[in-house]
Image (cartoon, rainbow, N blue to C red):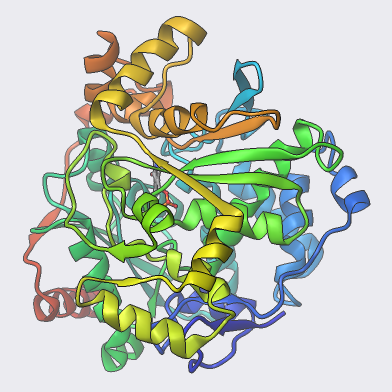
Length: 462
Ligand SMILES: *Cc1c(COP(=O)(O)O)cnc(C)c1O
């Protein structure tokens, strides 16, 4: 199994290298050269299996010979042992034909745990073979950072630096990043928004001398292994509702396009998915792109679903790569244009995108109203991101069963939930003392040289 870059000029890599590398050296993202296909009997055989067994069957074809089967099974078992629900990803029914896939039972209460926990296990196993050290640098709109810190805290061979936008993450999200006591964890509050954080991380990866000097590795959703781990729950949920005999649709609250792109891969692998619906908040660049054919940046508007306050949606590049017939040169040109504000999607590419994806946007008022309405109608307390998904899904309901991804636990965003319902959701027991733990973080300017100096200095000291 080999991986190629969406910009066409980076080296072709195997699974282990693609996972450790993150961003390709030509600035592109790694994708499988060929997506493995599962037959209907392969998929039908997943019915009733535990989450871990589905994870093994879905991910195994992508690994080549990087892990032996029994070693990989052990890593999967460890990755999901810390989840607080036997089903890992339970499916609950909201209405006739509408289901919610609860992806927030992991240690940090957001779906990011599904990928980050297994990546932590896989990277640790890979580093233990050679004794190498790596430096992980990641940008977060709140949930990736906490999930990465949880997955890597205390590991001997890894330093983790997480950049988050100062003042723009929820108190729970910030405390999950600033309260771990382990010395290999560095929470950096950057003066800027999430797009600034993400841009500085990309700059660090594109500075090859720095990148090689500190042995930089990435765990943002640009990392192929993260996308791969998320493909699993599409199979798990669809099979629970009767796939492959019955088609299903999915609606995915979207920011960086990683989660919904995993659904696209599931479909490429042969899972019978009817509609794949992109749900955005008021930062609606992806909805506008699908409707108008123009991918145009307008600046981030902070919202009550902050993990989706994104304009530069990195993984969309992977979808564009396929929509443009895997033409790396065309993608490089589009990404250069994006730096100057945006680009027009070609007619052929737009038709190709519309054949797979539908879309919708949800305003702040609609988000709050959806949380309020669902508590009464179904007893389900939705986080604001999940509410965005549910609202957009309701506009797309039809004969095919719809599964909306619930991406975070309501207690991770208590202010918005309280505004909508008058009820302040309690943190689950394993996080009950979060507000009593001391915080530790470093304020940093939005400046590449300062950030690189800080990373160099702290990793040299260890
Ligand atoms: C990260 C995140 C999203 C967006 O996921 P992408 O893969 O970036 O599209 C949505 N909801 C929550 C709660 C998140 O943490």
